[in-house]
Length: 604
Image (cartoon, rainbow, N blue to C red; front, side):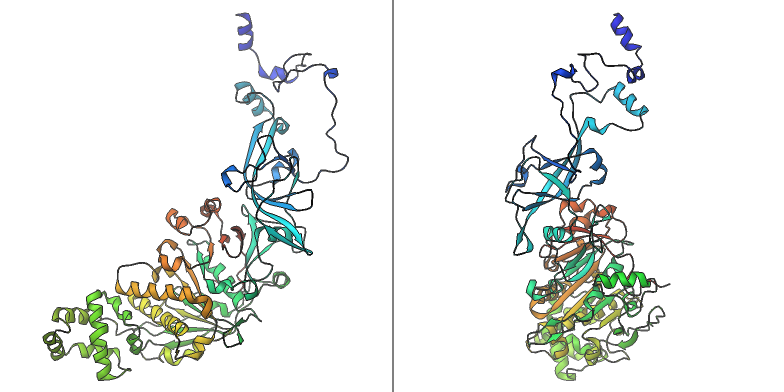
């Protein structure tokens, strides 16, 4: 009983200065003997330490075709523990000079000695000490093998991980630009997106500049330019998606950027950007926030910057809506949608809610008869008057071609488009040479239009003109057919969403076909949205490059379909941080975009 009483009244602080008796259990749970029982071993190396630690085989060292069977763990020495992060890239060398490139996927402390540190005594000691003695614990990094790097004729190449490294192989931080780019399959040249990052911090190297630029393939020697395999930029409000989108689009307008066409020419791309918030016309202007030092840095890294002089805002004339923009210096050109475009795209007036039966009557009977009577250039006003003819209604009903109830439904539902078609401005079909300009960007602002149905009709009419000409074997406008073209669409979820309506079905089908033919026709879709889950699946499946900024909605995060290790980071990313998932370009990576917009941005 006396022993128990003494222990109960024992002050743990008394242990701090108490000498350990010979042969007793020390604080690490080991039995201490005399110095003669052990051979003295020096851990002091002859030279300085290399790397951050060594591979450990204590629980096995396995490289396997089956991911679940792979076991690759590294012991991290005390002085290096504060510098490693989940997601950091490491390299371990094989004896013959090949290298295993890997990524940290987990970090853990494990007990070095057989003792229980979850006790009242240990807890109080730790609370009263300034620091913890990390040497009492093992710090283990679990690694995911990414690739084996090897020299091939003086250049570095990568292949799948097919070798297991030796135990106690030194692992080091990957700090060489060529090593990291090869390991992650990042192209050396192409369209700049941002700088490689881990955990929100830019990856640094010993090179100059010390950052690693991430670029998308943009030439046919390395495979199809990814611009023609389509891009999605997804981000919530305040995530910086417009800033990021402008910076990417600016690269496609860099001096000297050209794409070969089927007729043997090389032509600069044209960009047509649908702009519901009227932000992209500012690409005409320089960003006053870019000073001389920042400009020199951009030039060293080969990043195109500065306003694009050939920027024009094509402003749709709709109803009484007026457009006035003092926040950009781009030329403004008014246009209208001619009703003649409805003959090739009758679904443009199906936005009034036509069902399949009514749409069939419109396409198969009413429009052909109207064209026969008024010609291909008949106006919307004439078409509305045409449908108001009671004799026509009676004739079609008696002949059995269109039931009177169907006729009345069509007549009611195509009302309300008088503010959209044939307004007091040049038709877009007469402005094609100005609208599509190699090396230039055209924006189509719709912020000034209050009617959502009118906005949708305008955007889809213009987009359909471009797509139809691109896909046509007998185009009316060679300028569109022969010019490499990027169609940008902000708030794409408002126009390319799945729905049961006739209009949505036709639109999705048209854009899906355009996406499939993009590589052949030099046509790229550049979609920007905060609701990627609303983009129709047939279009989403054709997108090769997904750029994801901060998204707070779980459904939206799941929809972008990025690897799970990056998915969890998305809700916590700061403005400008992004994840890029482009399987034909690189491994999935985290990036940090440029702090400055490369063109004018904001309305201040």
